[in-house]
Length: 86
Image (tube, rainbow, N blue to C red; front, side, top):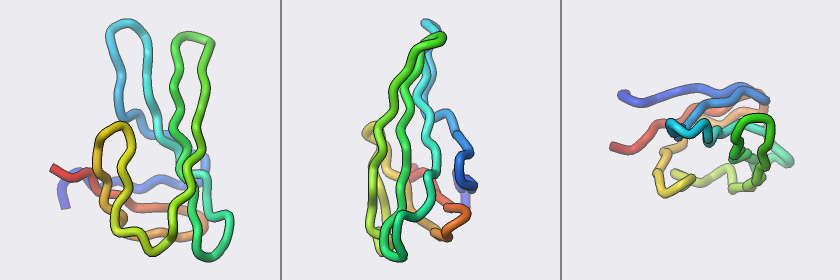
């Protein structure tokens, strides 16, 4: 599968960056229960930043972050595998 990646708990992946030093990252935050997992969306510029924490049902087939669709391949308490839609 093209565009497939794996994130462990606390691992970040940059999903958007600009020439002005701003970036957006996603981070897998683990599973808060057996049926729910969490993804953090981090925004930063230099030494300043903020983050949003989103909760999704484990049975979801896809999630949308920053207007991009990510298919959920596998969710485990310690990692998640996602595929960026083309």
